[in-house]
Length: 288
Ligand SMILES: Cc1cc2nc3c(=O)[nH]c(=O)nc-3n(C[C@H](O)[C@H](O)[C@H](O)COP(=O)(O)OP(=O)(O)OC[C@H]3O[C@@H](n4cnc5c(N)ncnc54)[C@H](O)[C@@H]3O)c2cc1C
Image (cartoon, rainbow, N blue to C red; front, side, top):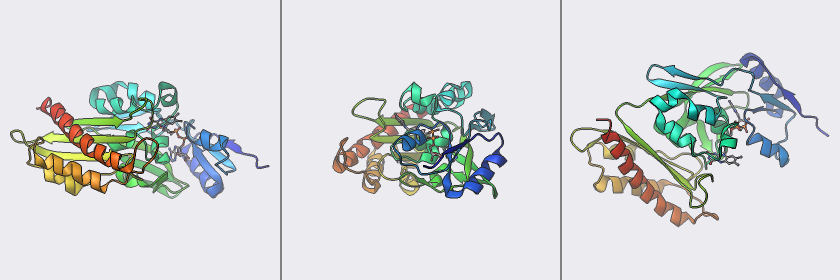
């Protein structure tokens, strides 16, 4: 029988060394809400678990124009942090919709992103805000946009010896931002679809910038900057918003499952993208 060794390094260098030495037989663990299930179900075949909880990566720091979230900050700690409430209330709103408080009390920011589950709430808003992850390994430090972190279902561009250490989230100025989590059953469910819209008002009743991200409708969060650009200089109650919503519904790759057919989900994407844009516009109007 394999003996699973649990390591609790107190420095990042030590954590990186343990990952390098363990190679594919070592796995990071943060809150353990995903890793715990894999272990219990016998789906994780490793010799070493490397815990991140003694590294002091759990802070939320204010920076110029941004907030930096430590990778091991729990979703609930971020949600309740005064700086998040004051400067990025949309993040608190989104995190408040993840699972239950019991899960949020242990699930971490870094674990949520590294797990790369398609049906996840936080990635959409982080992509829309242009968040950037900092990653460390024995080879040094690198930065990667959260958008580029996701590669496929449960697959990121992180190498097995890399530790995501923090996420820098820009605070948008004069913009309205909305997240709509679509779950026909319990609100504590994972999203069937999750639509984020960010809108910056321009001259008159026209839009200066828009960003849409559709989550849970394919392997990775879907954003189409060229399509979003068509909203620039346009009113959000006109045909441009309908056109944008149709492009997202076409480009998405939802799968039929017990929570809805592919066709139903595509139709809902159209509805929800338009709704999110409208609601984001209403919020943006309040920032004028
Ligand atoms: C009952 C239940 C309900 C849920 N509902 C929702 C929901 O409604 N919405 C939603 O969005 N999510 C939901 N989730 C998913 C939950 O958000 C994730 O399981 C959680 O965020 C993972 O974080 P963790 O810290 O527990 O990660 P862990 O389980 O510790 O790790 C997950 C993966 O990430 C890797 N990892 C962890 N930290 C790092 C790091 N810093 N750097 C590199 N790799 C790392 C681990 O090696 C592992 O592969 C739910 C989960 C459960 C169990």
